[in-house]
Image (cartoon, one colour):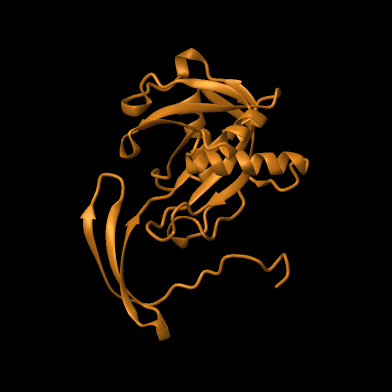
Length: 214
């Protein structure tokens, strides 16, 4: 195997039966009877997710924008990057990223590049996440700022040097999966003079539902 050929392999197995066990407000719980060939037929339950996008905003001083939200399943106010669901029909992924940056951080990016793509828990949910690096930042006018509600209401926002964020990740002080992946990917990309970044509209064949999105 060469370095260029080292990649996940999309290889859907036949599904003999599928049912929705729970229809949720955001995602569903699905049960599939999947044919694994020589390994037999087995039942697997998983969460069907619409997909998400995250944005690591980096300013000219090498600081990243972090927000803190209460996450009820883990009873924790964890530090995160601006992120949200891909729940607007037909919206390009990079535009969803720009929207989330506007809504959650009051920021506009003059430049967006693909930083990293994630499958956070492929054994239990089909969620796909694309994370962008946002640069050339400016602030949203007060009159155009989004009114935040629920967990977003009054959430703190801080600017943290990327090096400090890397240290917090490696010491286990912050554990949000999107944040961890984005921070470490940004550190590696910066060390390589950002040569690993991809254009904002790079196709995403392994995105939500397996469909290509740009």
